[in-house]
Image (cartoon, rainbow, N blue to C red; front, side):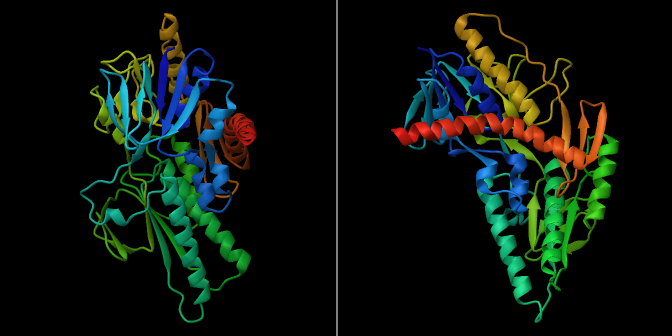
Length: 399
């Protein structure tokens, strides 16, 4: 029986798994250092108290139990070494997992440039546990602000560094949440400020200008201070120093300035880019090992015109499905299928029930309509997984 291993239970890994389980005569092992699939684009709702921990995660144990596959296992392990010649994966827990085919889908992490002094004091909300920690500390500061409002009314200043999708969405959600919080409580000490810092000439670099304009106006309406053409130089105890020489005070610094591949990518000797992402061919295979695939953010993925695809759930879906299908095709001796990833569009959460989006490059939407489309897209992904984890939970309770 052929053994297939997926490292990473994120979007790409789950999409690959959903293809692999169609073959009931292979052994499938999903490995992740976490016990849950983090629905990362929805974490901002968690921080803004629009959802709970359960709403932004999928339990991997019950998910795997929910599939009708007798040879599927989930292992909560930390990968430390991959022996590609002997097809063995070594873990921190001293467990060795063997494979015939391997799909690398461990994603990316926030890149913290070592040249920026004090950056270790910034918050990284890409990691769920750190997002929860930020949420708790932020709410504690709000409580202390209200508790002491007659004695002092100190500013609370959140500085978001990086004005890509993550930075814009977290800034908008936090601003909207704060406005609603102070309005609902009619608290007198309502001086919370949010700044977003972009090293580019605008927010959301690389996106269509109409999306940028809509988002820029929304941030302004929410009272967010947008600083462009400026880089973060240093994070001091109570201030951020910028490349234009100004210093702005901070209570919290959220850093979303860039990404790099998971460190697991360094465990295999294949071609990678400067971010550590694995360079794959049109079949999602690595350049040296035809039995090792990479999908999702951990891979450098291009379309059939050679254009680089940005890390996104859409590209994770295309590449994950393709990697899963091609592993099955290799097992059956069939011709591999080329992956031609395309962006279906982009949807940006901009606080509350307001969003902006580009649909298939043909239609720009904004406001409540864009928000409802975004929620529908999320629900269409999450709902089938919820059915599987409910089925898996029932199975576990019968054991």
